[in-house]
Image (cartoon, rainbow, N blue to C red; front, side, top):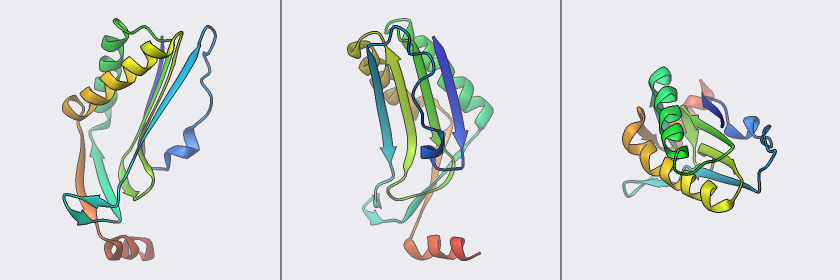
Length: 138
């Protein structure tokens, strides 16, 4: 199985393309986790993500490899944003190619469940619209 993992401070849309190893694939499953306009009951304009990149990438690869032993798939692309991510933009993207949809969906669900508990990526703080505008001005 081919695995691509990336942490980036640029919008995820710039990295999206069809999988390169689709031979034998009958399913391509995608998930995008978007930043909502509220966090802990308050209105926000953005979230800020911080990661220890080498460890986060290693841990993401380990989780995918472990899950793939029970849910064999052909290709996984995982991209997580770091830095400031405005409301409406994707904070995470997962794309999985599998021979069958059930395996791809199961790997996706298992990965997302484990990501938040095992991978050193943190939401540091939420920005208000005013704070976000001030950052864009600077």
